[in-house]
Length: 346
Ligand code: AQP
Image 1 (cartoon, protein in one colour):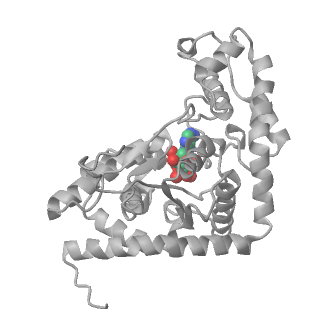
Image 2: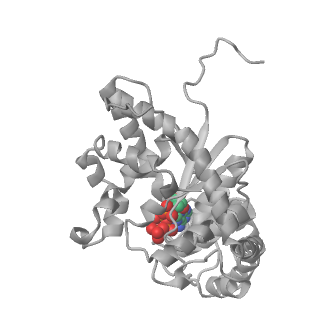
Image 3: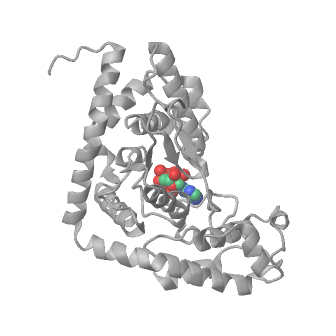
């Protein structure tokens, strides 16, 4: 029975998240983000998913490769289970409101906040002077991506938690400065056994699509042989698997492979160790490879099928962009009114 007197949430539940088409998607993107996006869609919440091509160009992208990666990422979303009828699926640059609200948020975010963003430090590295201004401003554009839809939930991998928290700070400061309750404070949703999939070559480094070493990651386009070979060659240690999760302490590579297994199997690291305790990687890796191929091969097959018709992918993105624009534009217009911009074009 519903309680009619219970306070109504001010914002309806709405999910927004995105992935950069800055290369082919990896197992990390799949387990940390894409798989979760599908689960959210299937929970029946309104879901909006974006290929954030404007974020991708914060570091140099070859134009032909960017176009290809954007279509391929769209194919990956659909192959993984995103239904473009039930979810809104589009690429960011087709909805100009993202850049417009991004500018407004550049004027809300404080330099002190941006200076604390660890991803900028990681990506800019030692040569921060040569990094683009866009790379520095990236989190303000990401806040715009989310708040443009009044999204309340943002499924992300662990590495993006700080950016979603910054989004909350930007929303709160906007609301406070203008004396409104206009933007929701969205919550990061970081769940599952593999919220931070690590490199297969270095268990202390995140698996990343832009890592120069292809052996460090599993790509969603890898065939069964490539997946098996990368797992066989993944860095490990000589000890057998422990019988409890605490035994993975100080063994980042072992922990990573156990987490990947658990996430692919829809299980938990503890249950995986129950099954494999005492076994070495010689026994564990082939089982992990079989599981990975079993889960990923249907996705890469479907991606290949979809990529044979790029015009259809473009049509899906165009339709998604129209639907996204219909939600975003009124929110942007209201934002401009709140901040005192004259809007006289009707
Ligand atoms: N290794 C990972 N484990 C779990 N989740 C991950 N994500 C990325 N890598 C992992 C999640 O995927 C979503 C999209 O990420 P992104 O493409 O916007 O950028 P990113 O986080 O910087 O990912 P990459 O692969 O490392 O991209 P590049 O190499 O271009 O910088 C996010 O939800 C992210 O958490």
